[in-house]
Length: 293
Image 1 (tube, rainbow, N blue to C red):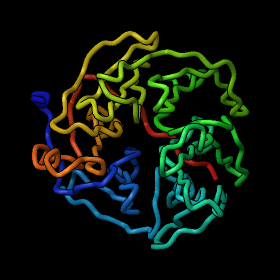
Image 2: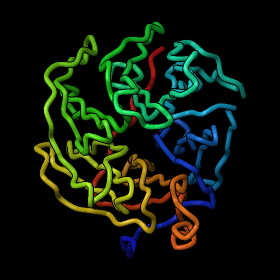
Image 3: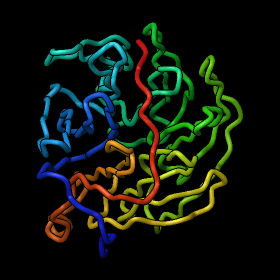
């Protein structure tokens, strides 16, 4: 696959599964995780440096905490990383007694709840669920049965939540009430042909359009709020995991990738698998929501 003109690799990090990128405006840095290595990474464009924190356990997603530090979706539930600390503390246990399950992608809603879902390591059908962590620490089950809970984000007006359960090969749209975080009617919005890859992480830009990473699809796609395909950004690696807008003007699209499922020949043919990429698509994103707890 010939990469998109203007696409650039950022730094020299290599992730087994790079996931959940978010832009931290106050520190002007990009934060993301390497799930299977248990790493939280932070890239500063002003210095060109990336720092890495080993949290000692699998971590599927991270968000900035309004009061300082981070909130994490880990293998045993929701955790907090307090400012200046190197170790996390568990605040919302989820399946801590089930070593065959872990949390995956996650993100905060406009009112400061942190949403993330689970999956089984063997990807068994129906083995996960989708949760929200309320600012007071309460954990609520939002969708009781999913397989690989993945990308999510909200429309600019906060009234629609977009969500991916990867094996469905869809982006679904939920009616959403920002006040209480309740989910209403669910409808399929975009269906992906398996020949084009599997839907993974996503983000919504300032115009309300959806940018979707395609696992084994070598690309990121942009869809309109009505589900119409608009454009594609090609990557030099098959396992494209997630996307987020960043930069001072939120006009840079950061793209994470993976090498976890590649065989030896595939890795040799994709030397940039697991890298972080940046692309300027000509549109802007929105500031990332923070956890209000």
